[in-house]
Length: 232
Ligand SMILES: NC(=O)c1ccc[n+]([C@@H]2O[C@H](COP(=O)([O-])OP(=O)(O)OC[C@H]3O[C@@H](n4cnc5c(N)ncnc54)[C@H](OP(=O)(O)O)[C@@H]3O)[C@@H](O)[C@H]2O)c1
Image 1: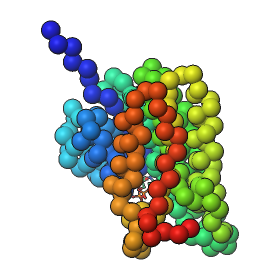
Image 2: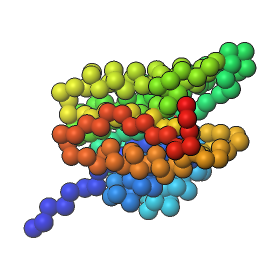
Image 3: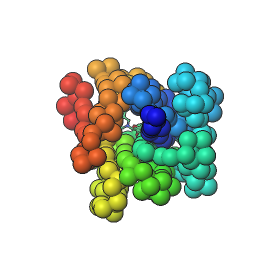
């Protein structure tokens, strides 16, 4: 009798649009079951339907800056699919450059989402990823590698870059691999005015799929992708 191995499970935060949604689409094509997390329930449910419905895709409403909601997201994943093989801490947003050009309230929200939220996703997912000897991915940015003038966003992404390396060292020996995804400019709803000559969300999704498709002894730690037209 043939033994059927269940499809691996990939949880993605910030899955309602942009890079997260494109990654979910490509992960499904690659045979993964997906858990789609963000705040916009309707968008998540529409994407889950598009990706095959309950057997293949689960929509979970989660504000990543809330620890209870992050724990509930992982519990819902394990409840629906029984395992977690990869987790992508991808939710995030930007803001105007200049230390006087954004509000303290917006800074707070951005730090809580981009930095604290990513840390909570790592924390919530580690126990299940230890079980599966799975894979953890985080979306940093080119802005997490080089400092942009007056950019609090750039500061949050430097923290995410540090978090990826901190997690890699912390999880050494657990079998969990850690990958930082560092996009240059990508044409997504991240921008109010959509950029030209930018990457497409699916260009970054391919980088993610590359990282999670490697054999267990290969740990792709960082992927920085710029559009050919981007200098800095
Ligand atoms: N676009 C670029 O040029 C670029 C470059 C480098 C890095 N990045 C990074 O790539 C990641 C994805 O961005 P994107 O370009 O794909 O933009 P996007 O289309 O605006 O996607 C952002 C995602 O994050 C979710 N999100 C925001 N705040 C959240 C919260 N508190 N809790 C849960 N989900 C939240 C949004 O969903 P809801 O609003 O439904 O919650 C959405 O799904 C971000 O971390 C961004 O910083 C983007």
